Image (cartoon, one colour):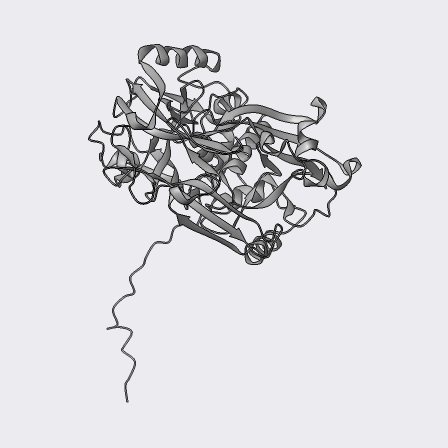
Length: 476
């Protein structure tokens, strides 16, 4: 029979120090930064002059070219897919989507899609100055941006970029995101990109707090979260990659009250994912019906949706200073909006469980409205997208927020959307009803913020609006 060891001779248990599961001070520090609209490094009123100066300091030019002038890119024999000779970066292929049961059963369509399997880093370095967190932001040129130069994260790089497949210069500040000990992680989550244009694309969205001094490059500036919030009210200044990272900021959950509990909300999302049967299959680009390839474009025969085009780029401050590439160019200005109202004194937004062919899962939460109106101009009455006309015809007194923002300028050309927050109430009938229709649910910004801490719950357009909504709430 075994006997217990004598306590006098038993080895002492190793005492392992435990850490708090969450740093309660982080949200307060971000809130202080959001409330600070004048930074220690650059005044908000001087920002436009600083950005214009960075534009003058570098040479930028983007020209459309025919496909046969692409260098390193070609339409693959046998499939027609537009691919790079290295086998890296991305490819333009075809996608066949069919939907079964769900909100829109029996739908089927074909389209070109971007296949970019590698996961990039979108990251912002933060550091305290005078007791306030500041964000290290970059004046970065992207060939698809309408005004070329916009405010981007500290790092905005694909794996091909920061592993130097292109044999260019080092990605500045990448060490803070990939080298242990250089920074403390504040937020780190895989998020989807545009599910209508990318196939299963994710990026690593990160916020890290630097340890020690951080040298400041000429194309970078330190701004508070409040300053960035002010800039989010200006058209085409803060780029999409910055907006999605900012949506991941731990700004707090906004209080305990909501129309639906977090458990009920998660159950509803799970039910929405379960009830939609979506089959998305990659197919050769040459086989996509309704799409025609010409000298300069691959476009839809009805002139809707988007074109695939080619450009030649010169950019003096990029890791590679000149290149050619394909881009997707949408046909028309998008409209992206949350309907918003107070319920029990708490701000809520009407989220839509959206199906997009390129999502890794069947459904992510999107804005109430996410459409390009020109694509639906031929439709009337009940065939029109839900809530689109209400948003487009909203009285100015109902618009809490409005700005034009461009989408990802590294893959999309002149892709702009009018982003809005539109107030509704009980007098607006179904739009303001608490009993929302199938596929829609009232949620608080705090609930969206909690969901954004996990990947593939909130789509990139809704994350932009969340960043804008947080900026609006910070204003009071």
